Image (cartoon, rainbow, N blue to C red; front, side):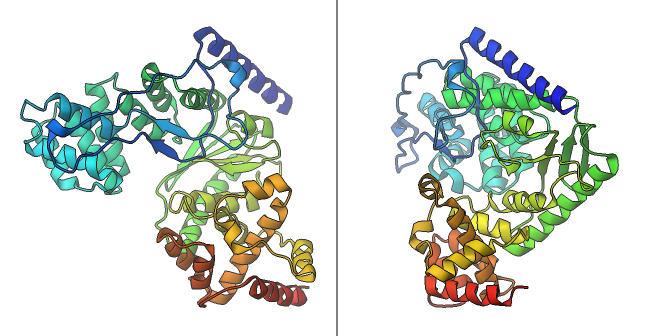
Length: 447
């Protein structure tokens, strides 16, 4: 069965390759880097006559299948040329002499353009939309207001109504795809990306679409159940019904526990996909070849034939990422990985900790503000991950149950590693020597 499934993956990939070559369009990655919207020059006055929109850059050269499904080393971000804010600004300029800018809807539209992610005027937007139900721009304004107010369902509903009114608008295609690319059903996201690509054949977008198509095809015959917002998909050969129900409950409880640990609001939805082998996981992600589980917007696991059906430690680890990553995406990687290791109660790296204590060696805290790419390039990733685990355990030992939540708030406020660590430990300063002293005592107390 494993061989047959792997063969199916190869057939799917070969089919996608042929389709891409025939259409002269590229394949796609699950994006882990932040989306970087194209910037508009924003005038200070609410005056549609002053709105200027940068000329669109020429489209990039077409990408071929030789580019693969993933970007090169270092990952890939998305540059979005057609945004909802740009759509509103262009319409305000187009109707500069038609009275839109001075209308109540026009003023609200311009407020959305200026304030961007901080735009939160939901009641006003609802009122304006009720007065102009046939205007896609009113629906877009409502969607942006719902986004600012954290109302994802209302945001998506408004975007769908707007797209029904303007089906070929690339900004709407991308906006809907962004909201639905981690849903159990992927046709809407794939369709939205197709609309966007018709106007901007960007390689990264095309690769994203192709990956979603592979994922959709692999999951086509999967079984499904939903438990308290957790939707689990699995091939019948990987889990029994009892194992699937237990896994959905485990993820549900883990989300509650992760929210309590981090002091965050529990996410309302999560898609969990179980694959029969690592080949399927790698076919839908840009993960490294040794990856056995990951969270990239969806929680992806590999069946292992155990009584639980999957590795329970990996379930806890990735569920923590699913809860924490959307809340503090800019927190340093050591914090995300350290908290996930601690939450998952992963095996303590005693040998690495003992080496740190014996040689009085640690990674300077200032070097941990960011990713682990430099450490991975230099072969010191094990030390960085081990120290991340140690720092979170030290934090919890010193600061108690609320220490992780305190660190989350510090990072949200823009604190660096040293500052967040000190606050979480209830100290004015934490040094590398303090960390080593803690590790020495802990190792001495270990069985």
